[in-house]
Length: 215
Image (tube, rainbow, N blue to C red; front, side, top):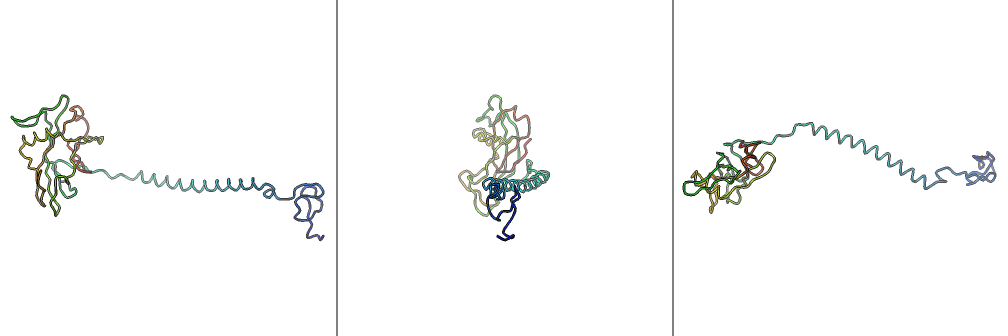
């Protein structure tokens, strides 16, 4: 056997043929660690890959957090608050709350309704103008509700609203007919809420997603 095909045992140092798995002199395994422990080597590779992936992922997370921080520091767009008397363009129509008043009783001398114990009537008058090119039915009108600053919504009291319409004599809403293009009508609504609650915080009339500040 030529010198090119010979090597030395890693343990005892005696000459052995290259490529043998074990030294014929001392019996020690001549293979590299990775060849002798294939399973452990495979696990080590997986762990190393996981560490590298985590490091790369952590860098992306830092950038994401940085972007989030920049977004958070940017000033948020303030929600517009309309005032009584300002026109609000919504789908197909334009609505303007023209008057707001707080009352204990609504109606005339013949037909009237008193507020429930501990409550108050929040009465509003508002105009609806058809700004589209086609007639608009009352079922296409946007919802009109009372809402507090926490977002709690209140529906109108139907009886009180009818009585307030008689009292003010301004309600000429289209009930059976459609509202033709360019025509404006006036409607009334009354909401009954707890008097103590209405005395605190901000209150709005909500028309679709728009708000009119009452107080």
